Image 1: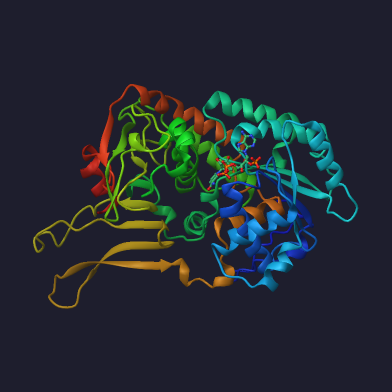
Image 2: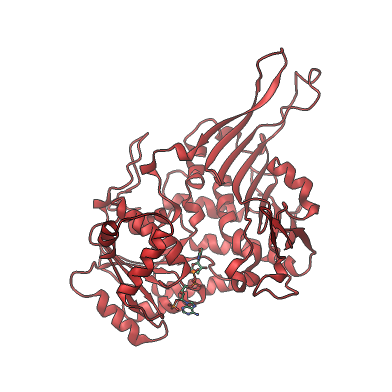
Length: 503
Ligand SMILES: NC(=O)c1ccc[n+]([C@@H]2O[C@H](COP(=O)([O-])OP(=O)(O)OC[C@H]3O[C@@H](n4cnc5c(N)ncnc54)[C@H](OP(=O)(O)O)[C@@H]3O)[C@@H](O)[C@H]2O)c1
């Protein structure tokens, strides 16, 4: 962030002053793929909430584009239905927002359509700053960048801007990620590109930096001397749903590990940046990715378990196995579960195992980071207790609760040597509501501000792919362990999972 772009989310210590929007330039947000699922379920509800909170700069316009032929009125009606699926609003409230919306048909391959779009965007009275949001299949990103460049829409005269926002996946492997990046960079500079990982916009994930580096308490313990293991889990109860076509090509490693889990790993394990600034934070993340022990090498070598769900039950309802899902081949070898144990070869983390776990159709939807501390070196209560004292654990829960819980041992009232576990808990829902923005609201606000801190930088994308390529290479050759839908994964991982997640 530059000095000319004050942080609208910054506040004095102890305060959060979320919406100093007078600092932001009005802009036209162009959503490409506006007839799709992401626009309906995430973007439009987030934009409405920002508008209602007064967090959209005045003069903003929102233009939906797509191949589907829609009138602006019809588009508005669809967006009203989409927003109403998530919240109540009166027609009066809606009409104030609806005035910002318009729709234009756009065939991405047709240059004439782009010329028309450019003329429309350049009409007097519309903001000269533009955000182009690719809510589109990823194979369209390069075309969009190229077409924007052809009609000059990638350019803006400071202080106006032109920015391009893209969603994961950023390529299918290292080579395609590099190729995509080369296409985007032919038209856009890195500071114009926003690669979204909406996990990074979640409060508890963002809080990792605050918790680690605004407290003197944790950082001295945050290393191999005191930490036994770190587990990062993102489990889902859902199956592939309507996304079988994409998922069967991607699998769990591309869908979850390459992006969300690697970002959480970076935030939990990176060295302290010197300042809370994009460049310094991104540099530390890249350094961390470079420190990952290459898969299958070293002593101990990183380990991997892969699985695929079979028929079972979720919340008492029978569900089919992965291969019986609509759109999945009956002999598909796509992994829907992975547990990766990795090591970080640096002074801080040498020898500490990190476990990344994600899967579909697991027992619960849960996103969390568990920091497992080491056992106390000697128990003076050993002769009085029948079981070892559980070691301390710090749990950073992202879903279903956003919570920080520190698991400690304390004396229970009663006998002299009565120990019992307790939790020191901070629940985010207790935070003042006006200070809370959901992930897509934060992402959009950061894009309006030009703040890249919680987005992927290209070197991180490439380093993450480079680490995962040998892991992906294993997918064809190592056994795919079956697991029952509604369980915690393959039986082969049961004991380890129970220990890691304390279940
Ligand atoms: N949905 C989510 O929750 C979610 C979450 C994270 C990331 N993402 C990412 O966000 C992007 C959009 O997701 P989505 O779920 O909204 O996708 P989608 O519904 O499948 O597609 C969005 C729109 O793109 C257009 N489109 C589809 N195929 C196209 C093609 N071959 N060429 C040109 N346009 C095409 C369609 O609009 P027209 O036919 O009107 O042009 C469609 O309505 C994807 O990259 C996805 O990976 C989505």
